[in-house]
Length: 470
Image (cartoon, rainbow, N blue to C red; front, side, top):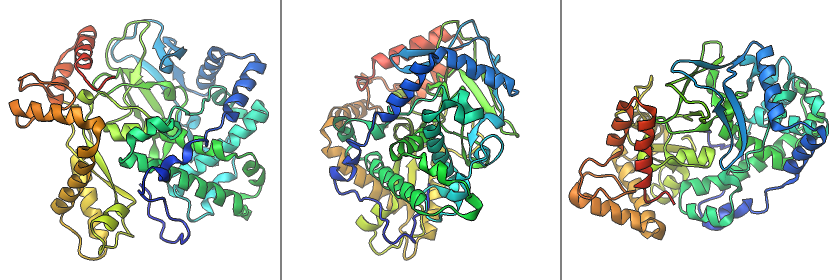
């Protein structure tokens, strides 16, 4: 979450004033970058498979490891994926990607990158994500992409990674108007408009402010930047970044190709060691010819949609959450309260599913309530109680849900389920009088089943019963 930028008098993010506030992206998408990237690959005569093998060799030559049992598959219905070419066994090591190969705020400032752009970014005080490491990474990636399109070899050490790069044009940011209107009324819809506002704001600042003496030589790097690609790189970091040391995003070669599965179904465990190196191993036996997947973390569906452009099936969602923009709270419900020192947004969340493995941190609900309490204490004026704020926010969302015809059949299903079980929270399927249909029960069954094929049967049965799947 970023701080509200009170010192930008002429910079005010778009308000929640209807569909027009976020209809900006129609026509914003450009095919130029895609066409040029395809042309580079076509004329170089190098296929994605060849590029992947070169990427693997690059990792190995730089003290990393990628199992020979991992194959790259492209052109599937879900895009690129990693697949096993031979049986993998529980606990087997599959990857080690050294910290020095990560694209990160730290690495683009030193070593093989040696970019002057980070110093230029540091000199601008009101960039939206300047302190998080995202702004410097997005600027560097955009400039490097321009360099790669003109001459692939100009990217030097990083060329094997660039040979495999694909812009993230499947993100909600680039969806068609008819799809985006399905999100109308949600804060995820509103956030799309805010993204464009800040991308435009930051890009203009980067281009207009002269390079400082500490960033001498950055002029050429700025000239290689293109606004459409700058948007795409911000989206790429959002969808491909892994939180690394200092809570800053890292783009990790090869690891980034893994598709997501909910935590209950993902095949892999991974961790970043004390030096920032990524190590990856199998949770259980994986047959040959199987896609290997990784959980992108314990995220609710609104978080998954915002960050990656998809959602988990509702029976596997680890917790539920809603975002609250503090500006909306202040203007609509608490007009006498000054929220200017608060974060741009805070969140309410339910606890994690009890059957998920214990995490080394507070539960989602505890984190959300603690954060909310801290933020309320920073507001000026008479702050509402947490209970009062929660009730106000709940009613705010319920008013939307009651009027949304797309949700009507699922609200009705929830009401019918509660006739048989007053505490039911199941809205995606009919429990047919059974009191044991729940996310908790499904998680318990999956966790208790040690046979992969039987777990897949449980998933298939749950998916077939999910009325929201189409």
